[in-house]
Image (cartoon, rainbow, N blue to C red; front, side, top):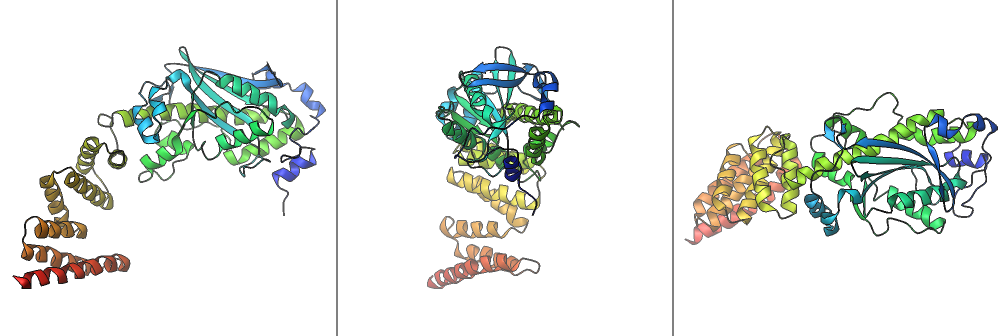
Length: 412
């Protein structure tokens, strides 16, 4: 079995876990001839716990990441409703912190630490990105202090899978060093669940790099390194003292943070006003479902109607019709619901026949018509090619409905 990253780190004198959180390792002599601040274009800053190294980038307010601007112009009302956090509705752009970590492993726990933390915020007329880096684990307290200072003006965190990974990891590291965690009281926008909600039906991947291509039109360049290689590149740096290969890691981290800013502005705009953007039909349907769940029924109804006017796969068209009809029935617009059911029934959707049978029985008081709709639904359920589990699901209900309706018919 090949040695794990933790085993290799231990062989260098780097200890993992809470037993010794300030391991002493010796940086190789050749590191002195390759200073970080020259190779990586960064600087050293003094903190309460020693010096921390930071690489900074400044992006003007007009900067676009691919097709999308990174400057937040959309209000956060919709994001606040989706996240169920009223605090976000009142957050100013300058109070947002975009954060992403590069770590010594993906397993989590006290033996995993963030050797690089990229964080950015809007400041005056620019987007200020700072990537804090530690040469060795004993510099972690200084990195954490520098990060805390950078986050001081902020009240909300923006991450991509950060609620599950980045934020808990950093809280653990702050706790191990007895440093107050600077974002404990922050509101938190995690963009990964929102991306999954919006694009799970259309895009094969909702990973951030995939969204950069499919949503932002901003593919990464040759400097990019895959995320799974990053811990090993750091390990190689600890062994060799040569920071040159880490340029790709800084590139990777910077684009992660910039992409989050572009994605937040884009999704915030969609959730604030979903009706004007040019969207794929499946994206419109996803927004309709989201707004229905938020009980914003007028917006949801408009979006379902728009989705049905677009080109949708058959299954998605059926779902949109079913959900739109159910929504309109709930809103008291039975006429629209009936028209939608009749349209879907004409295209062979069993559920629409069932809804029309219910309508005939309970509202039109026409038992014979309800029986006809039920009988046609049974024929569709018995049609060849229908999966057995779907047939079984429908036939149990339909046979029960038919028997009950025949009983009502015989009573007259």
